[in-house]
Image (cartoon, rainbow over all chains, first blue to last red; front, side, top):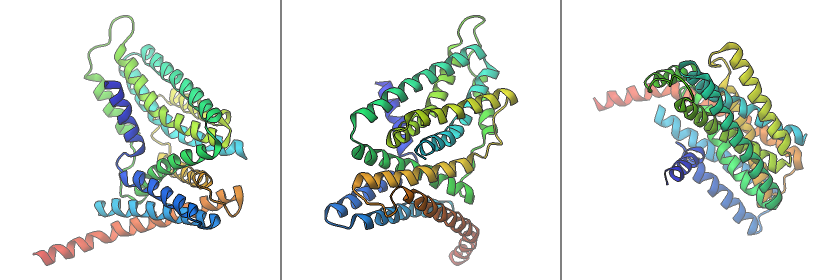
Length: 70
Length: 256
C-alpha cells in the first residue's frame, strides 16, 4: 500500500506538481480541438487552433505565477 | 532526421536529470560509503533499463500509432509546458534558480545526521538514498526516452542519447569530484521544454486528426513560434516584476 501511495505521489508530482492548471488545461485544449475536428472544423485550421490554445494556456499559467510573485 | 528527433531531446533532458542525480550520489558517497552508493546507482540504472525496454517495446508493438501519438503528444504537452513555464519564470527572475551547490550541502548535512556507517558489509542507507535519487531523476529520462522513441519509431537512438548524457555527466562528475553547479541547467531546461512542447503539439495534433500545413517541416515552424512566444514571455514577466513595486507603493499610500 505504501509503495502504491509513493507511486501515485510520484506521478502526481511528475504530471501535475505545482502547476495543476497546465495538466487540466492541456486536457481541455486537446478535448476542444478533438471536438472541433469531429464537428467538421477544417483539419488544417485545427493545427492553428491547437497551437494558439497551447500558447494561451502557457500564457495564463505564466501570468498567474508572475502575479503571485509580483 | 528521425534519429536526431529521438536522440537530441533525450540527450539534453538526460544531462539535466543526471546532473541532479550526480549531486545526490556525490553527497552520499563522500559522507558515507562509495561501494554501497555505487551498487545503489547500478541497481537503479538496471531498473530503468528494464522499464525502458518493457514499456518502450510494449508501446511500439501493441498501441496503434494514431492513438500512441495522441496519448504521447498529450503527455509531452503537459510535461513540456511544466518545464517551459518554470524555465521562463526562472529566466525572468520570478522563480529561484536550481542551485546544485546548495542542494549538495543540504544532502551532506542530512547524511551526517544518519546513523554511522557499518564497519563492514553493505551500508543500506547509502544504497537506498543513491537508488532512490537515481531512480526518481532517471524516471523522467525514461519517460522522455520511451515517449520520443516510441512516437518517432526510434527507441534505440533515444536510449543512446540518454546513455551518452549519463556517461558524460558521470565522467565529468568523477573528474571534478563535486556537483556540476556550472552546467547551465535553466538554459537546458528552456530548450528541452521547447522541444517537448513542440513535438507534443505536433504528435497530439496528428493523433487528433489535424493536417499540418507543411507536414513534418511544421515542427520547425512550431519550434520557432514557441521560442518567440517564450522570449516575449520572459521580457513581459521581467517588465512586470520591475513595474509591480510601484503599483504596490501606490496602493499602500492610498490605503494609508
